[in-house]
Length: 312
Image (tube, rainbow, N blue to C red):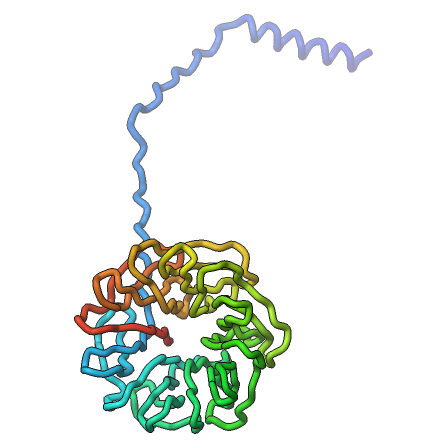
């Protein structure tokens, strides 16, 4: 009972206090109408293309292998020979370039350092050997040879030893290119009556046809991550650069010009594709983003520049 009385007194005192003078209500300051300051975001500048481009040029009167920066600067003649030199291919570490040459009276595959020194002949056969491409580990080179009566895909060690035939078909097989993981080789074949792109295991087994179209498909080039293959195709009436998934699906046209576009080559980081085009009346080297945008002309010469290859 005592507890209840004590509690009642407390409540009574509180009620009496409430009946007294009330405390003033605080005055709220009006909200500021000033515009908040916007912090500017930094503008991201796309990274310029890096690495080196090797290519074939006729600017000195015959076909030679040249090298330039990926922006078209610092042009150098690497071969300087009276015979025809074609189709450069960089080793994965950028130290060497393999290429096709007629300097000994026959089409053979040679190798040189990236500065043009240290020339070594890798093949020696009366038939034509051409189109070298390096394995991703740099230990092997695949190439096209007609030594058995028609064009077939062969493989050899990087020093020219251990040459072995990978395809066996009455039709022509050529233009091999190695997948970045080393498991596959894509190539062009007319075994089904038309030039199409095929894929096989690096030992020649497991053949898969990737393109099926009446127009001719040429020059496959794997993206550095192995997800895509760029190639040239005449399926729309003239030669253009296309892109497809590595299994042949997801076809995308990257160029659209009345002139011919050939020889796609990926940048090492996969952001750009170099190619040759005659859209300005003769073959020149061009550069575009991997989605086909941002076209840039890299060479300007009255003679032909073609077959670009991108090195590190």
